[in-house]
Length: 382
Image 1 (cartoon, rainbow, N blue to C red):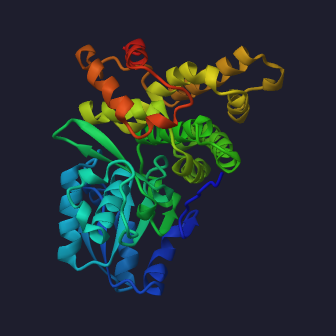
Image 2: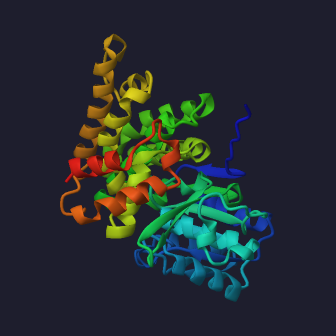
Image 3: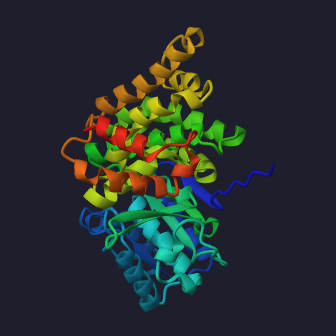
């Protein structure tokens, strides 16, 4: 069996990494960029950290900053129009997963206009050409969208999110600079960090996992679990470690898939606008307990990576419980809600379950799940 692995052409890491952006733009012969971002990042002068460098180098750009936290079909269509109106030849995505996901969809449609209705990109769309060049600059340590072939768009009309998986959408350059993440408030740092941990754990136990992806995921679990609290407290080394840990997780899961946590989290964001990282964090320990019988000895390795002692002396039941408890305790320690009370309405459970089982992340789960079981998991958290 052949395994495919997609990664960025180039990536820059560490404090000051953004200073490489102008040189890369010039070297590649790009003439004008469209900056895809959101209004808050402009307002709080996060985007300015990059535009100051562009201005100093006399590099042309325009800004599209209307992207929502859960980016919509309309955001993509507006972005395509903005790209064309600007006469741009590349995209500079500055933000969290929302900005980078929107940039990917825009870039794909620019080079594959037959998919301009956006909905046709769902799943593994048969696009022919690589997207317009994207330089991705994350401002959160969580989604790893800068190194993945995945993006998620919200269909507001149908109250659902749809996942797109396409090697043609990969940013050519990722610039992972903790400087861009230093202004994240505690709540967002915690939520995005737990999203990154979810990526690492789901990627580690997914059906498609193999030796190379396992190597990335277990290291990401170690880095994230040991540094997320430091990042929440805005400690410099914690920020840098989380920036790296979430990227490593992305290197893995992008190539092997995720599972039920993400499949169940997506409809919560689509229906209730729940922050994606919060939804994943709440669901993760419960879904881990559900999946435990189908994971071999991997929970022993997860527990050990998270700092649990003497896992080699534990029984199967003990190390599986230890892994789930470690995740639960970490989530609570960084301030994530313990349940879905006040978020989910019982009358929506059937719709949520149907949406989860139709989600592109679900097939990667280590075991099959029935609609009744999905409803039961949601209910257990109410």
